[in-house]
Image (cartoon, rainbow, N blue to C red; front, side, top):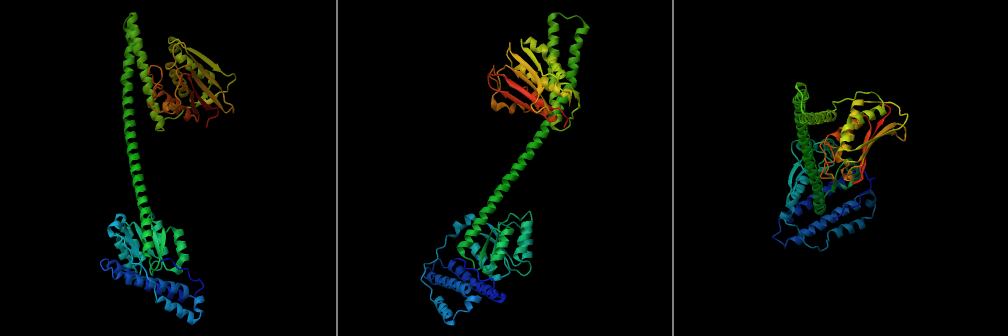
Length: 482
């Protein structure tokens, strides 16, 4: 059965109401006939007669829509009677073929029917129950809203015309409530209410059904809405699981960082005591060459460990937003010279050449000199670590092309870094295997500190490299404090 054309909207209200009432009554007849048909599966001899009732009912509905309007009523009485006699001679039809109930139940859902007409509710509920669904009915909008607040439903079938709250108002409240707005709503309408149906769909209704209900359309539209509802439920479930996993991950990270901070903080005091004791040993008496060498190695190792602890604490503070920059006027050339002095002895002992390139007449700038100096020392230390004996390390500072920044760079002639490792080496504890004797292409913390210190100055750090061709770390610092 297909929907008949919408009657003229210029008809008097009384005529529209009459059409509505007649269609509703015929719908009841067809609905109860369908229920009888469903119970006659073992009496196949009666099915053709029941099909004739259905066909006759459809023809009556078509006649109501086509003829019961102002234009059609002006036709001749003879023509009208001819149509009426034609209705009573239904054509032959094949028996209704119904799918087994067990096949339908696989897609069952919990449905809510809201209609002020008891017969409508009963027929529609029986049809949906036969399709394997669990059905609850309400006679008015207020009761439906209260029911939805207490229970969960997969689909709502909502009549438009109701005495307490009409369907549009109930739909509006459903879609405004965060707990129910995702539930598909199928509007139940008479043909004369199509303009209202369009408005309801604009308000968020999923679909509509015209009275009396076509069994095929009823099943198709309810199942489509159930699929949408289940898809939404799966998405909500996955989202909830993802949010819960993210919450647990953040909690684990917080606990890990708290533990790390506690450990490294507690390590500083005993380590400082050990270094102080080692530095005091030569004051207690002369040491031979081997003894002095051992003390120097121990002090140097302790200092490196203390620097790593300091780096880790500073990284943790920066990540937590607890570290601020101590701005002052900084001279770029002086900053470069200080960084080279810090690593000169180490580079010389490894037979590495250090080259300084400072552009002339560079202006001073605003920055945290201590953190920028440590950034350069970390980059130089990284270059020294991965440059073979006889290699060259170049430290350079110049003006950027737009004259808004100073650009610092450290270039080495080491093994280089694979392109796919550029991001990882700046991560905390991130390390990448090198080509030379399985070396690690990161200090684990030094480059992380460099990245955070540069970005705290509103600059950007970058790496350019290729395996076997060395690499260049560069960063820019704005001349004007931002």
